[in-house]
Image 1 (tube, rainbow, N blue to C red):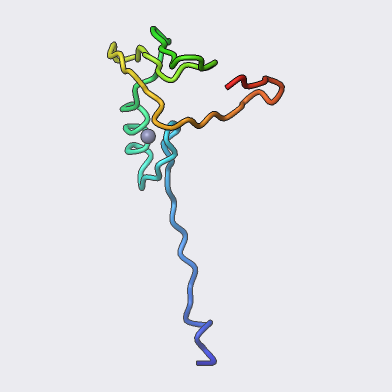
Image 2 (cartoon, helix red, strand yellow; image 1 turned 180 degrees about the horizontal axis):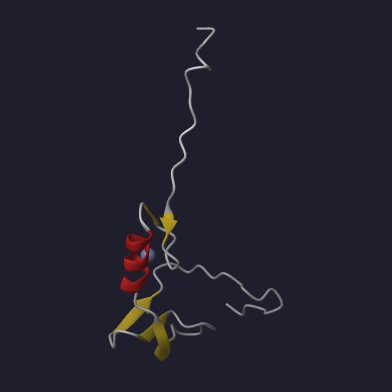
Length: 89
Ligand SMILES: [Zn+2]
């Protein structure tokens, strides 16, 4: 029991994180492949508002792949990125 600490050796593990999603990989090649697999949003091509809501609850986004994806908020959670902005609803 006294020499329990003497038998413990540190193990250094190198991981490479995807620049987009931060997932860890054992090789830089696999991290680069992950980053290349992510489709980048290019522009918002549509918005939809619920009645009397200040902010849209649906966005339609065109991506670098040419695919357009519709995102709909499932919960009424709003994060204020600009603290000076006042949220009406
Ligand atoms: Zn990734």
